[in-house]
Image (tube, rainbow, N blue to C red; front, side, top):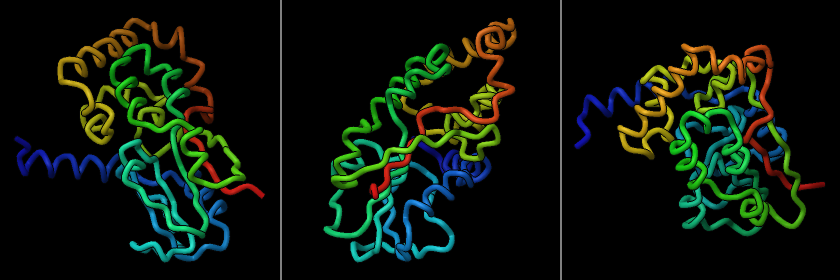
Length: 215
């Protein structure tokens, strides 16, 4: 049973480690075009509605923004007819190809299984769709796994992991084994031998994508 203290701790972790990444916000704002009112359907803890738009709860908005949707989010989703649809998402295939899958394969597999495929998302946007990859910056402030692509030590922090729902998709023993594998790789120098170049890479071409209506 989850205690009030646990809930408060999780909320505090989210505030510290999950904030809208500015580069993604700018991309969303551009994709929304001149839409002033936005209905957001979120599959994660962070809102990506730009500050200069009005967030509304009903279907009368100028646009609908799907923010990192999960497959179960889409299952019950009824999109309004008309209006612009923009999707900020993560490609499960590219997520599986990241370095974290080497050390936490069950965590990555569990998260990828919750994500709709890009083909599935394309059908929601409309007949003409642009799929744009959004590089994850070195300084990413939205703390999902790839946000620490060049800062692997951050994932050893239980507070950081508590802010990422992916880690709650596996049992505690599996999570601890994954962290032990990553810690050993960092201590031995194996991680840097295999992936150390990422520490000098200003951005990662990872799983984050933006789907927007085409011209």
